[in-house]
Image 1 (tube, rainbow, N blue to C red):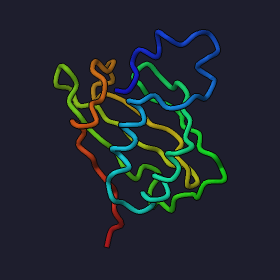
Image 2 (cartoon, rainbow, N blue to C red; image 1 turned 90 degrees about the horizontal axis):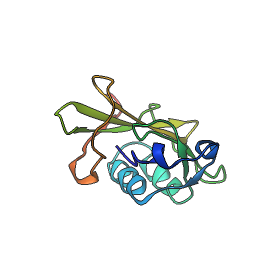
Image 3 (cartoon, helix red, strand yellow; image 1 turned 135 degrees about the vertical axis):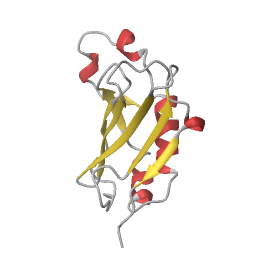
Image 4 (cartoon, rainbow, N blue to C red; image 1 turned 90 degrees about the vertical axis):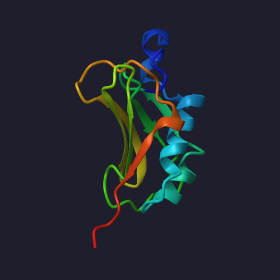
Length: 134
């Protein structure tokens, strides 16, 4: 999970405002984009201008990228994802959504739909990429 404490720190209306990425959000996205997959270079270029806003208490964030940056030619809406085991051993998933060539969301959820207990450590993430078939 990213900044779980954000749900406690966000004031009324702030969850609708886009902001710069936190250091932990930037590290996690950097780790995801460190993998090799179709469109990864363009997505890395988008990381420079990406902004985030609160999506949910599990650390999910909506992403907004400068529309003048190069769109990524990805083959799937979710070109890369990551997994790690939460504090109680339940698997947590982080999915990077790309819409029309631009980063759109970092979705965070547990396999049992419960609340995420531990923040994502970029060094503990198991990265999964989706490569073309054939």
